[in-house]
Amino acid sequence: MWAASCRVVERSDAPGTPPSGSTLIESGTPQVPTWLLLLTVGLGTLTGPWNFTMLVVALPDIADDFSISLAATSWVIIIPMIASSSVQSVGGRLGDILGYRRVFAGALIGYTIITIAAAFAPSLWALVILRLLQTTFGSATFPTGNALIRVNLPESRRASAYGVIGSAISFAIAGGPLIGGALTGLFGWQAIFIANLPFSIGALILLMLYIPNDTRPPTTARWQSRFDPVGIGLLAASVVSIVLPMTLVRDDYIPVVVLPFVYIVSAAVVGVFFLWEWRQSDPIVQVRLYLSRSFRAAAFGDMFMNSAGFPLTVVASIYLQTYLDQSVFVSGIVIALGTIGGAAASPLGGRLADRFGRRFPLVLGRSVMVAGLLLTLAIVALTSSPWLFTIGMAVVFTGNGLAIPAGQTAAIESSPRDYSGMAAGVAATTAFMGGIIGITWTAIYLGENPLLDQFQLVFTVFAAGAFIAILVATRVAPWPATERGDD
Image (cartoon, rainbow, N blue to C red; front, side, top):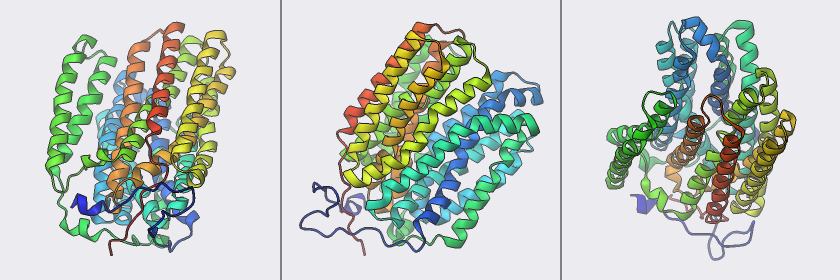
């Protein structure tokens, strides 16, 4: 079935021209204006990262309300973060089987209901469980939203669309700490959950009123597929085996010396997962996606990029508050100003990818990231000004914003159309793993009272990760494969 779905050919033509000797069949003309499609998908997908960044600043208040330690409240973030990294592929595959619009709607409904319940959580572990469910539903919106864009827009406009969505998510991430702090101070941490409702409900209304069903629904996948519960379990076990040990070391539950032995077991779990999925006729994660050079380069390139960009805000917070002794307010302003460049650059990155091909903005954006990280390293070494530190962060996130739309587009276009949701989910999971690993190892290494040379080493490692991402980006096909009709 996979081989039959892979009816694609590589493009090697000049930018903006169809491949010679073949007819480029793009997705059907959308029955809804592009801006309305993007508004719907954007509102549905930004609530997850926005809620995450708002909750980070509310942890002390949650600890006070439940009379527990601040370390214990971190599980409100950790457990849902692990879940998010493992269920995106599942949500995307559900969209392939049942239809992207239907799964997107179900995810929004579930997210809204659980969000309301979370605002009235009576205890920490009730809140953790509700956050786990909330994240599970919310994670399904990202791959199905990306798939909705793929099936409703032609390839000449997809990267621009992903750039707009990425910009909205970046603005949400940048504004989350400020808005979360204000809501918590005025109304309590419960207000953070209530603040999500206008977005999820608005997205659901727009979806039901204006967004059509898929122009070419994947009927073969829908009726002939079977869900893969063993694969889901092995996927979750693989992600947990990679992420949880470092988290336990960070919180002093296990000593760091046991990590090599733990990761031997983790490698075995991941190997079993890949072997199982390889042998399935319709797996929950199609590991053959990684046989595509362009998909592999896009997904792993984003993983290396996220290993540098994703933890940068966490390291910045530690540097500003612990080493420079800045207030939470000043740190929040610095980080918000530093990350806003990503939101501004993301639409430009998408337009560049549509105009010059997917590879160009990937190499350009990640080169800018490396330059920004080296600049940040120099600023940290030469000055203690938090405002100069903002400049380095701004360059890093500008490069990040330029690269993200092209990477997302290249990954999803490297798969057969009937696997659009899975491809988006698998690529997101791969990229997210880099971010989680980056956050965890830096937290372990920096410890309670980090020194200047520790921050310098961290930024040096980040720059190396971004440089590897540049090398990987050179393997991404400049233009997507031609989508052949399966009519």
